[in-house]
Length: 120
Image 1 (cartoon, rainbow, N blue to C red):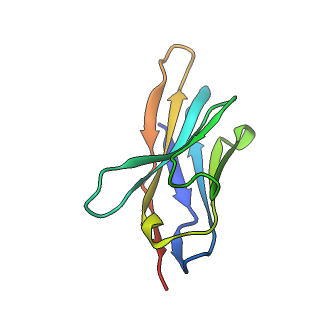
Image 2: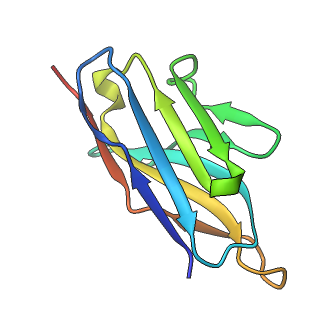
């Protein structure tokens, strides 16, 4: 059983910073892509940032402000968020494509979500 657990959300003032973490645990043989998504009230879930072993990609709205990184030894992905804006307010979800055993295909798993609120 694979589980993704996020942490690090909260309330921050505009211009502030937060660091989100997402740790994968359970039966894990390999993880390829890991990513962060967000869902604001009344909006569809959108991709914020994605990291593979060789590449990172960002949504245009967060480029230059957010940084995604990963610690493969800990099966953990991070999202460093700087210069936060009210429009960054959303529930943030992590996603990881995980292969549980050599006999399995990669399967996407989601975390439970963590609230980020940017407000004065």
